[in-house]
Length: 185
View 1 (tube, rainbow, N blue to C red):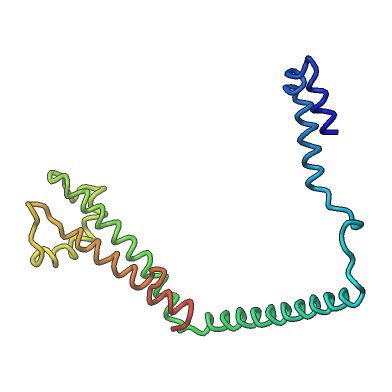
View 2: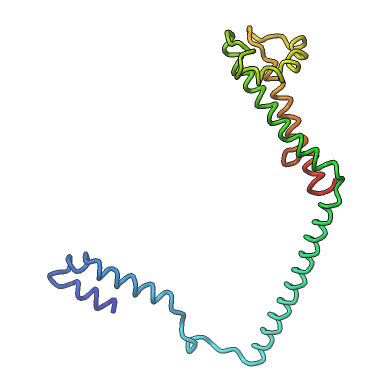
């Protein structure tokens, strides 16, 4: 059929025949059909009956091994679930409290960094006092130790680094509390 399509395109209307979408569609369908249809069993060599039973025995033994592996995997998953439930009862609530605590304080310190760019801002005004009042006691402790750099107060950046560090050490992917919850270490 492909040869007939190609030969029909060799006449004087060859360009229009090849450009027609129906011809190309038919050609593509025929090629896909030829690729998708499996070869006939007449062309494949047949195995002797003894070989077929040997192959069947090998397949059934593999299936049995896969079933054993699946049972071992299910037992491992079940034992890890027991392990997860055997962690100390204080770890989960502590992680649930520390995570938002560190995130909120890190955000507050980041807001203090932005507020410090505008020195004429009244820190006791309504929107700014939500950030100022909780963070000022922490900043006051460090201001005596960390001097301003080039006239800029960098103590919020120090606290931001401290909160981020402790958040990662305790609650990050490899954090201590995370490992305690996952693996009971």
